[in-house]
Image (cartoon, rainbow, N blue to C red):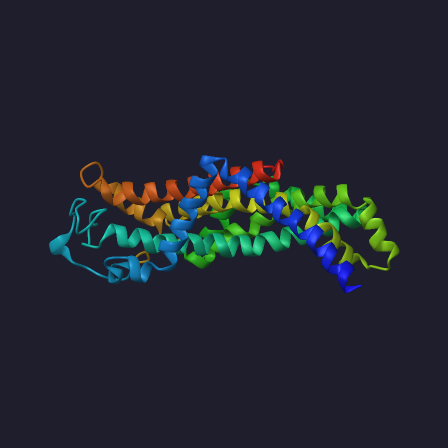
Length: 298
């Protein structure tokens, strides 16, 4: 038996390695996808290690140095300084931390909720499916940013409220996507075989169907990360997200607009930081979509 097992392992293992190698080659053959991965990896690294990478970490909190206010970009301050003399580059790095935290929390809430509801709707069908999807359609009928604005404006504007406002609507797309995937898989032979083997509904949904739906979900998560960050920055820009002195990227863009066009760096560099991060997630998501050869609703 052990000889047969080891022989089987030698047969299966190379094929798995070959599959991973082919997937890597397909992904690596797309320069824009690699660039997106590099951008996202670099931003995540800088955000995680911002307290050690940033040249002036104390500038991320309450800090004033009016003697160095409105300094243009230089070697000492690559992105210049703002109206309080704080280093803009340092605040951009800490702003990345808040943006990634925002995306992580929102997707960490929205994806499990939406996927679970979508699995139940697609697998069970009938009245359960109709009830879940009608609620989903109701939320989808509302413009995302408008609903987030309504929720955020009803409470004291903070990062946490912004997270709740965006997460309250982000599960809907995952519910609809997963519902369609689960409905197309529930009559497949492997699902019927699991039922005949005595597997219950929960096992079938989460151990049989869900693994076969992960590729489109992963692609959508990657693409949505940039949209979530942009939505959060929009809320901060109009004063309903991150509040000063916390270095929210949208807040920094809004705070620098009154100094345009003279001290352009106060607003332009945080805006470019948002653009680069969103672009990185979009290019990475496009690469994964081509790799898995899936179509994802936007």
